[in-house]
Image (tube, rainbow, N blue to C red):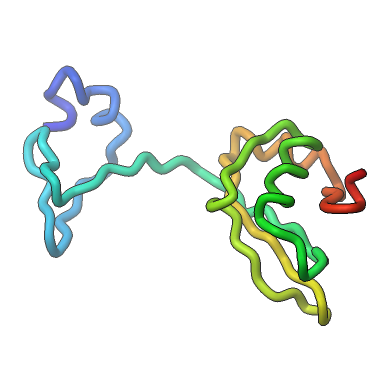
Length: 115
């Protein structure tokens, strides 16, 4: 149905498989209210280590935008406790097409270091 419907033809060319889930079955061109469609693109995981324990998601996102030009939502960043006491690590996914922007910056300066 994805490949034959003119409105969904572009999506249908990229679909490799359709699977049945417990609550929804993608049948025809209507997903209804139970199903969702998500476009998946190849991504890489970027990690910023040794951040101060008071660093916020917003601080990481604004430093990333200021130094690389890549804008990311605060909700797309996850923080976890770092290896050293008083530190934390930020992780986020970047599309492969934008990964070059991130890799150009060897060290992302976050917080008071960015000023």
